[in-house]
Amino acid sequence: MKKLRTQIFGFSLIESQFESVVSFRSDVTMYGKLEDLFKILDNDHDGRIDGLEFIGGLVLVCRASFEEKVKLLFEAFGK
Image (tube, rainbow, N blue to C red; front, side, top):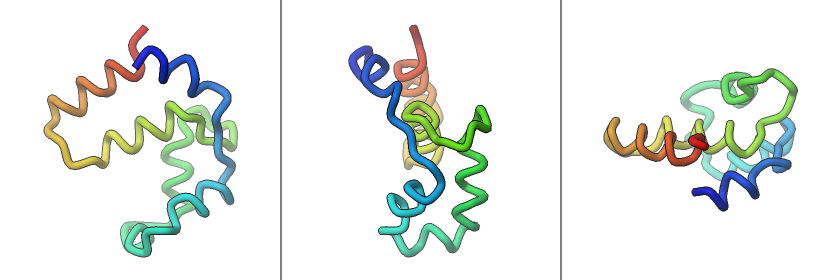
């Protein structure tokens, strides 16, 4: 994870890029509008989803136990 943290900064998606990335799954929009999902993931409200925001969102919706999610988040965001 340390390598991931050092390489993921600088990676970011604007809203149109985010929509292109997630639109490959047609069922994504049945849970809400993509623009709302973008706003939720954009924690710092800078108009971009950076790599850590994106990974954090993926971890929260993945099918894993709470403990597994917490462990992964601490590994991804820990120092």
